[in-house]
Image 1 (cartoon, helix red, strand yellow):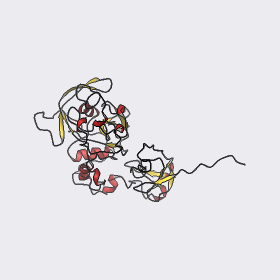
Image 2 (cartoon, rainbow, N blue to C red):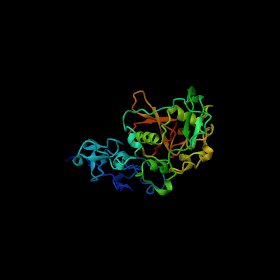
Image 3 (tube, rainbow, N blue to C red):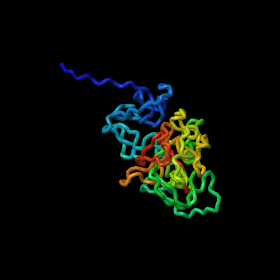
Image 4 (cartoon, rainbow, N blue to C red):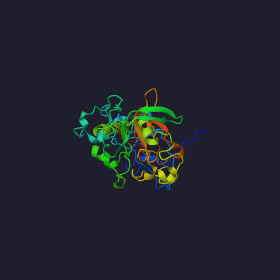
Length: 319
C-alpha cells in the first residue's frame, strides 16, 4: 500500500474584482492586481501566499508557471498557451492594452520602452522664478545622504509637493478607474514605464534617487522628513492603523523641510535611478501604509524591476 498522501487542496476565495480564485490568506490578486480579503480577515494583517502557478484571465484555469504566457508589459498576468494568437500578448490590466492605441497625441511622441533612461536635471533651474504649480524648489547645495550620512552635491531642481493621484493620472490615461473616494489618494499599480510616461506627458521627469532623498530630509541629515523622532500621527504607516491609502494632503505635520507630503508612508515611490550595478532594478524610496517606523527613514530604499506593478508603488515627479 502506498503511503503517499495526496496534497490537500487549498481553500480559495474569489478576487473581488476579476473573480479569479485566491489562496485564503492572499491580500493581492496575482491576476488583476486588486486588493483582496480585507473583510475576511477583519482588518488584521494578512500574508500573501505565492501560488505555484497562475490563473488564466480568459478561462480561469490554474496553470503551472511554465505552461503560461506572460504579459510583455507588466509581467504579472498570464494566459494559457492554448489561448495564444501571437507573441505580443498584453494582459487585460495593462494600461497599454486598455488604451488600445487611443493614446493622446502628445503621448504618441514618446518612444515607449526604448531604453531604461529618463532625463535628469541639468542644473538650469532658475531659483528666482516661482515654482511650477504644486511643485517646490530644492536649491542647489550639499546634503547628507543615506544612513552613513555621506555628503552629496545636487544642482537646483523642482519636485512635486504631493504624490501623483488617481485624479491626475486619469487625465493622462482616461481609461484609468478607481473608487470615487480614492480620487485624491496616490495612484498605485503603475510600472516604472507608466510612471515615466506620465512624467514625460506632463513635461516633467522622475526624480533621481539623490533628489528624492534631499527633498525628503533637507540638508541637515535628519532621520525622518519632520525630524528625528518618529510620530505615527505624522505619516500613514502601520502604527497608525489606517491599513489603506489616504489622500495625499492628509498629513501636513509630516511635511519635509521643503514642504513635500508623504515622503514617509502612504505608498513607496519609483525614482529614475538604478538600484543595482547590474541595472536590473529601479530604486524605490519611502515606505507604505503597511510598513513600520524603521522603514520610514528618509535613507530607506529598495529596488524593483521596472515592469512590475504592485498595489503599494506610486510616484511623484521632478523637473
